[in-house]
Image (cartoon, rainbow, N blue to C red; front, side, top):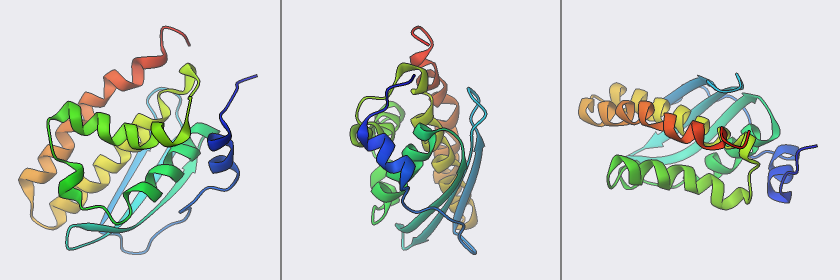
Length: 158
């Protein structure tokens, strides 16, 4: 049986920010390319600040816990601050927001946090497209293919 941290179990049993959002400024959907788990992420953004985030997920405990933690951590954050630095720094920062909170994630489940970040990037890209910020939208979209290296982290042991 897979050993999960207490934080993962806690966020799986009592996930935060579950639900749909009417007229979100940003919305993304992902079918995890590794396992098929599905997650939808909704963002309420005002003046470049994430005021609210909600998700719906049909997936494993780590997928649900990842979305729960991430939606809580991004509330109140300025999008521009989350996108400071190189592409690699941005991806490490965003994935790190999840992994630092959840504790040890089984190697066969290391593909779950990157999927949450990918759906966030899609939602942010759509927000930037809606607001006419084409360059920012393209930057967010451009990060998505670079996540593939993070999906493969657990392959050697899984």
